[in-house]
Length: 118
Image 1 (cartoon, rainbow, N blue to C red):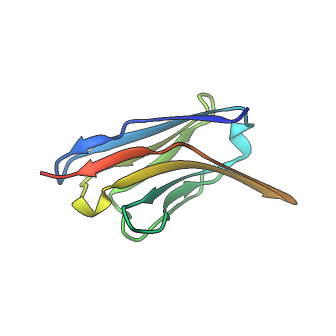
Image 2: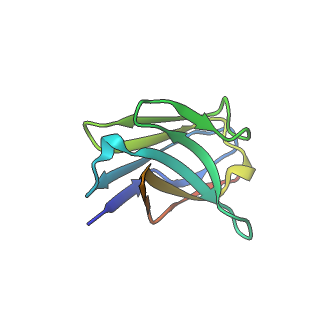
């Protein structure tokens, strides 16, 4: 059974920092591309950042230079370090695991709320 445990969300003031964690179980974590997505109220879910099994990263333009995605394969965990947070970063953040080679495997976490407000 695939399970994700997301943590680290909360309320932070503009300019502050948060670190999200997503611990995965039930998958061969190291071969998956891991990602963080977010969904703000009334908006579609959007990509924030991804990291491949080889460690290559990709970021949405809106978070480049402020957010850093990383992974620890020994702990089956992916992280999202978020600095210089802005009110427009407010959203539910979702962890994603993706593997596609013939058959596509795609799994989602339950989401964690991030609110940036003074």
